[in-house]
Image 1 (cartoon, helix red, strand yellow):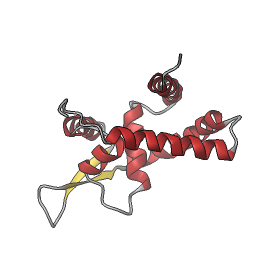
Image 2: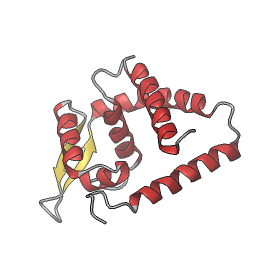
Image 3: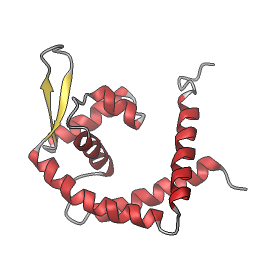
Length: 148
């Protein structure tokens, strides 16, 4: 018997391994999550991006997102700029180094996405994405602090 969660986890692990293997080809010290954060910021640069946006997009706790951003700042991938409206908010901006890495990374991601989608029809891809989004929405309704 197969379980949905188990199959999703196996698929995630395989995708992660392929991406990590490809990341060793010239991405210096970028991890999978570095590339994920950078890609999200890159694709949304016309809007101010804050830590809370990354927490929501990647379903992360505040402490996990904060630690990841600290590491990325140390690597020279991002800078945090204070906003004029609220000194507590810091906008996250990619550095030139991150932009260069993203240009390389996007070429690799296109190859991997093609591999993932090979043998699937357009309808199957749309259905898969729709199904995964429904699963994500189901899981977002769960109270994660253990209380009912």
